[in-house]
Image 1 (tube, rainbow, N blue to C red):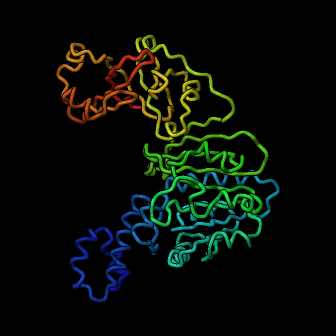
Image 2 (cartoon, helix red, strand yellow):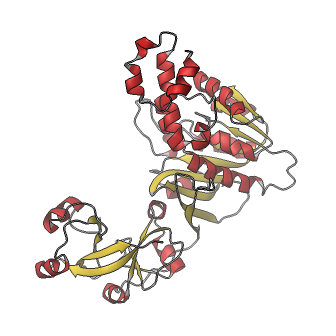
Image 3 (cartoon, rainbow, N blue to C red):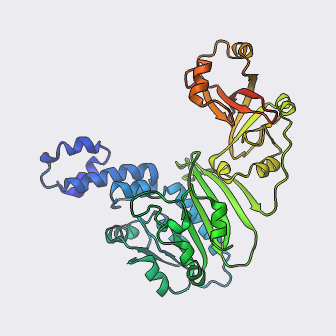
Amino acid sequence: MTTSEFVKQFRESDPRKLALQASRYPDVDMPYALNQIQGWQTAQRKLPSWAACDGVVYPPHLNMEQCSSEATARYKQQVARRWAERIPNASRTSMTDLTGGFGVDFSFTSRCFDCATYVERNASLCEVVGANLPRLGIRNAQVKCAEAEAVLEQLEPQTMIFLDPARRDEHGAKTVLIADCTPDVCQLLPRLMEKSQFVMLKLSPMLDWHKAIVDLDGKVREVHIVSADGECKELLLVLASDGTPEVQVFCVDIQSRPDSEGQYPRSEFVYSIGGEAEPQPTNSKLKIQNSTFLFEPNASVMKAGCFDEIARAYGICAISRNSHLFLSDREIDGFPGRTFAIDAVTTMNKRQLRQTLSGMKQANIAVRNFPLSVAELRKRLKLSDGGDTYIFATTTSEGDHILMLTHKTKK
């Protein structure tokens, strides 16, 4: 049995068990085969269209875990296409990815352009990507093994330049400042803008995007805070020199697995930066008495901090300035987050708690601007985790500590 035959036959098996059977397959390059099997299994979860393509070669496990998911890569593809279509009189479009990595983002964004160049300083990754691109049906691309800075100096004008700077220092510690990433985009910024119509920059979700706008000398035109299944995954900035002062912020939460039609459904809230949003009223007692639904924004909205904007857009009211929970007397289609129906509200008064929680054995608990942790509150309430009840513990604008007992709605 050859190595490729072994990989194909056993790709759904447990690699750890296969490793114990290595002596039974003397003609198989077992370390390589096991890596390919593990890579394919990861691709089934993160890159289903790649997993469905025969012959794709997978890199070491760390590269597979760090690469973009198909859901987020397809989102970048849509952003790149929209910006490329804005370019007037573009007879032939082009892009260069200066930090190619395993090539997931490149494989999707490159399809939006007539020609594309993948750049990566790691020779092994270049070899893998060079073999994979034609297998994925990408024939408009070339691969260059080189340093990003050197390629940028010699680069012909491009429609788009893409960068995903390394976010670890020389000691392996994570960095969140743009200037601490490799390559340093702030230092390269004048050259990047000179060489491209627009730049797409992928950064850590931990980064302070407000500071990034300042650090990048007013060139940021769009900020995309991208989450998948409620977890903030990446920060995507689009830079251009078109002179437009307005910055649009996209708070996006994508479903990580495709639906029956192969699409990746998402919720999205978009707003523009410019002036202060009008603060929302905070008469908590009145709002709680008249409300039947509670809204919890998704991770991207939380990262953006656009609470006044979202309250105004959907006609909902914040429980307090620091709760990040919202109330309404009506359910809202398309709210970017989770919606709960309110069943009961109680203070922390022991008698009230006994009456409200009578017969309850378990609940999902979350705390927002509350003096106790989830573990401390769960111990005090004597409730195990789980079930259909969701308890939100928070503090009203009047300083009252309350518990809101809710259940998820179907929307």
